Image (cartoon, rainbow, N blue to C red; front, side, top):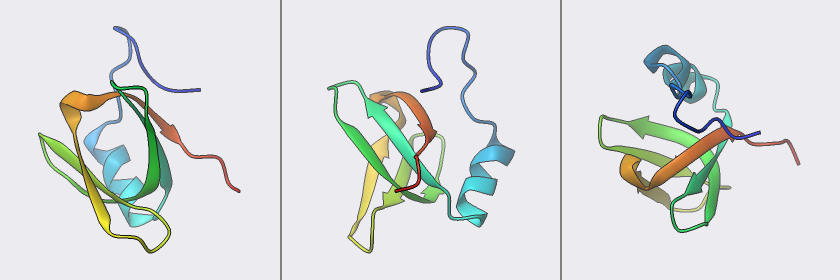
Length: 74
């Protein structure tokens, strides 16, 4: 299930850092309905950068993210 909604605080900085350290696959639900998943490479107050399966890194603006979840293992 995606973490979203007005009561969702989103991941803490410590949790995001753990996602990066442990190379956890994260899936983002974007405001345009798309879903992007990959390993979180870096983040700042405005954006996330993910890399999916050895592809180029993608930068996602935080303002475009509606929700996130740990991606299911495939």
